[in-house]
Length: 111
Image 1 (cartoon, rainbow, N blue to C red):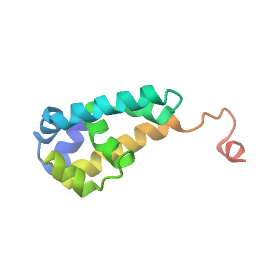
Image 2: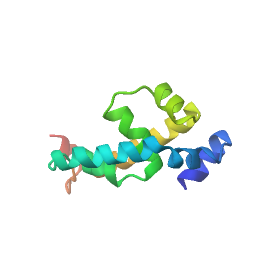
Image 3: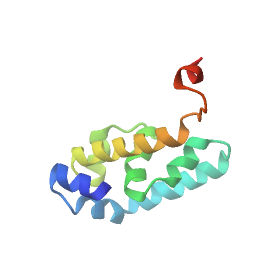
């Protein structure tokens, strides 16, 4: 579904393959695993590891390294819209996983 969404937006079906093949993708995944090992109680790092490779490769430098969307897109040699889409996908996935679970109504959960 994610690949279909990206293809529909910018027509560049090979961008996800390009991200997967980038050595930096594996380097950042290894760096993230090391950081998660050093900080085992950090749920954000654990959940970042659970994202698919392409999404994680866009989200990790944005959230953890503080890179801009343009810098990520330039480094990965993909379009800005691809990075924006991957960040949106990652945001939604992380929001679902990291949001507090509340059995009661949302209003009561916020109090």
